Length: 125
Image 1 (cartoon, rainbow, N blue to C red):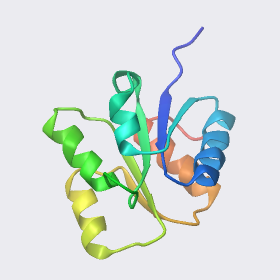
Image 2: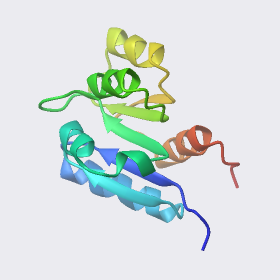
Image 3: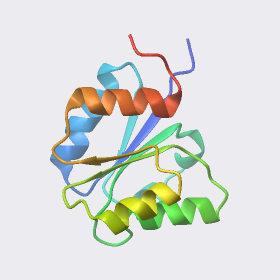
């Protein structure tokens, strides 16, 4: 069996988690979901995550705070940020930390697919 990419999805909105999980699975990837950055960090799935999709604004640790924490810990994983409240200073902070993409909700499924493929370095069909 081929080694399928693992995409971890973090969002406090269950409907966004479910929709994004369905999209990721439709691409043939493994999708893991978490309701918060803290739940992701407390899980044992970080080491197997090939790409991270995270909401920016969540209760507790934000998506950009998670990015900073991962960078401080020496973890380099492509991160796709999604947000309903795009703010330039947050976008700039995420991009300065090496964000793979920064999408505004609602986003087009095809746009997310392209971002995932770019983050993983996989060719588009």
